Picture 1 (spheres, rainbow, N blue to C red):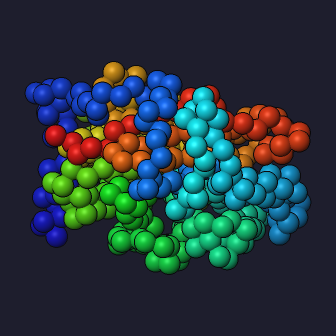
Picture 2: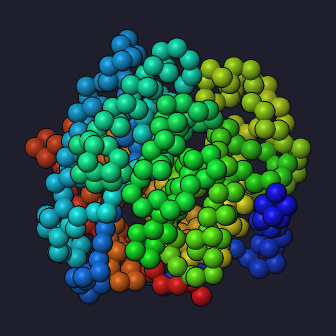
Length: 403
């Protein structure tokens, strides 16, 4: 217990603020630009090359008037997405983004908001959530053999899956995690996990990362102890090796990578206000005890998160939630830093709207190449009724050991 407390104290928010004041927060990850056009030289064929897909925000939706029935449009959209993921390997890539062929992926990473109704509690909402989760499991499977998807899937939970409580998606992920191909580490609560593909260490952290062990206010979304898991996982599985790490979360950093307000202390881990059991967030009209924020993610927890990972070779952080693609570098506070950790926000892949996308990631030598495949049109991923094509850009990131 003492060792765990020492570990948490070493990465406390106060320590983060002190270190930033002394040393600054900038950290360069190689010299490659995140948004440069890809060069054919870096895309040469490699026997050691391998790949994976990243999707986000499928938002399976059940009918409120018939909660045991999934909405037809939601079901068909996700079926077309799965069909696209299955059929894309083997197809030629445009020469403008390096040419070659799409390789069969090692798996599909899902960045959360698997279902749509998990953030609402009680009665019909819970029945809808159960239906939505059941259809996700049936369609996506787990190892590439149980459902329609031909590859293993590695999902995390988002705010629409469950902001604070255990429900079908949270319990389902916990039950699925021990059987995911290649998983090497599980959190004590079974919700967070990590695995290795090649030399890269992947860590699945869920909706938000936290909490840190002090009295700063917490955000309205439950972290399910993802920060303590991250600390112990990196110490055990990465240590001083300098090996590249990819972090997976649902919520974005863009709104919460701001200075931590150190004037607020004596935070409470109680529910926000009466009625929290029935709704997923605090009503703007209810009083709240000190320590509970109406923001999704505490800026102090975000600061503690950065302080934990800043000394490691973080190749990239991937998130969903925004339903739009973002590419940034994060230096601890700014998301538009010239040097820092590469952060990629994935567009929604299977929710409503007219603009959807997912990432195709390829590892070749000591570089991670990221391409985006998009669908524009109300009938997503329908090649006859929507514009389905590659985004004319590639992001290329170094994977070499951090000095």
